[in-house]
Image 1 (spheres, rainbow, N blue to C red):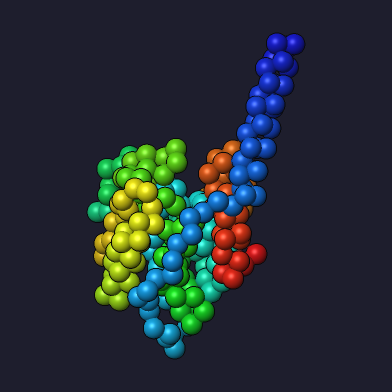
Image 2 (tube, rainbow, N blue to C red):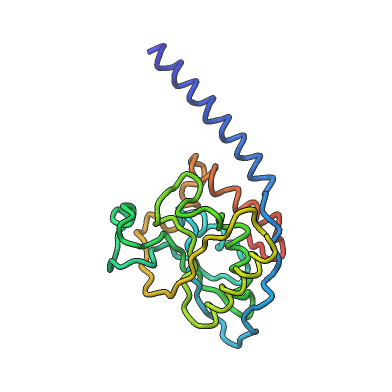
Length: 224
């Protein structure tokens, strides 16, 4: 029993150290300073549109966009594959072609598609790592923009070219730009996962710093 208590105490100390380190990182809110898109959507009379983006595990990406002004809802799901009605277990094999994705409903009169892409590249994920984000590996964690229209495709391609020309990142951007065949909502336990599990090590280490970075580096877009 004494050995068990000692081991438990060491575990608590280690976890506490990890939390302290990552909390400091989260408060710092590091993120690259990216330019706004030079080519973007024109102001629209419509008050609703959607964007589908993939940038690794959807838990953190979803939480980032929930805090962007003009975004009304974010749904975690799967896109880009060939399997109908995919499940998390199947997608996790990396054999379906699907990527963990988020469907962002937003008001184009309040936030533009190009601005969402700026948040995507600067805050939500690292667009230079192929089929990997942080500790997660596989094509299901790839960087991708699933476009719903010719306008979205033009804006996405233009912004990637702009960032590439500006050498905004040390390494090449590997983000895939592809048509959206379908978006499938993920299981309910994946929805609002950050809020439900905000103190778990994975969220604290990998996702909380992204949300903090949005608040610090893009305060005009931040929504509590």
